[in-house]
Image (cartoon, rainbow, N blue to C red; front, side, top):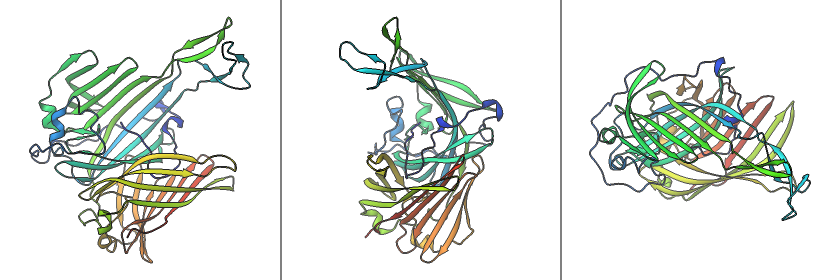
Amino acid sequence: MRRSPWVFAISVIVLSLPLHVGAGAPPGPAAGPWAPVAEPLTAQADPLVPDACTLGAWVPGALAYGPPPIVRTGTRLVYFGMTASIPGERSELVLDENGRWVDPATGERWGEQEIPGASGAGFTVLRVGHVDAQVAQLTSRLYGWDPLTRQALYSMAWGLVSHAGCMADYWVHPAALASLAEVDLPGVRILRMPYRLGERVFDAVRIQTTTASGFDAYVFDLASGLLVFHGARATGAPVVTPPVGGRAGVGAGSTQLVSTWIVDVQDAPVPWQAYPAPEWVARVQRLTYAGTMTTVTSGTPFQLPIDHEVTIDARGHDWLHGRTVSRMGSIQGMPPSVQASVDSSGPATIGGLWIAPEALAQLRPGQPIERVEAVGIETVVSEAAGGRVVLSEHGPLHRIDYAYDLATGVLDAINISQQVGITRFDYALRLTERPR
């Protein structure tokens, strides 16, 4: 499943979190019917989208369908995943001008470096911000999760715009799955099967591709078309190992293991999703934010400048897709840290690039917007005064404030606070120029 950062936030990668599987049972899928709630749409022409369907080569008919009947604007999907990196060797050789080993052929010096292992767990919360007969837009937020404390911490977010009938690897229209033939060939297997998750058994189809370095397996519920499980294994390139008997060796690279499964599906509409986008959305080319990142450890603050630029590279009816570049200053004499990522927004997005001014005017302080029980997060209207409206997401270890300009509806400011151990990270970004 795709992972890439969105707005500038501390990348608390799930691999850095401790994983104690025995300390708390990972969540299983929610109960309740996931059967289609409407008749499937008729086949449409294959649209051009910024983000392709991962499984389009194996289920080509899905690209011509509308969305699965269970998917609509405002639908929310929650997944839980675990990952581990298992070293193939304890250490490797890397170029090091002070290293103790010398390559007699080149004169290069090499030093020994330990290869760490890591593991972690986290939730992915997907929100469909817009869907029509051809195109679906969604945003995704990743929350690292510690089973010992059962607390989630916001890590990163991203956005996609893909085919309505085959959204990246999150769903495939059930009509396309129904016509899928079983396959058992070198490199690909397609198998119909019952699939158990916790107490639930799905009538499912498994699509698995295999290469020399590993495999990817996707399991889809045949009734709804939703991805219910994704598993993967990938082994990295071989590494150069420290000399034994005078010669360097070659060892196995690290193996990455991933398991992700569905936890919940809900219709979760927001108060502003039925309102038309502000007129500037149809022509905006770029939005630029600037501000600071402050770390506070034991009461001592340290601050660096940051900026975040969203360049729109695709747009459609009520959605935007953009490429972003985020830069964080560094200590004197060092180059800035640069992150490139993908962003998207739609009318039902929470924390998107706009909310219609007419809808903002009706929001009131304290008004609840969303609660995700599995993750333990809640979004409310925290402020509605002084020409702006602020939506605040609260979690046990973080808070995110999205401030919107009441006159234009543009996302005017972003503030993120995260508590990681004894250190607090505070990000404050403001829009440098309002769209015209």
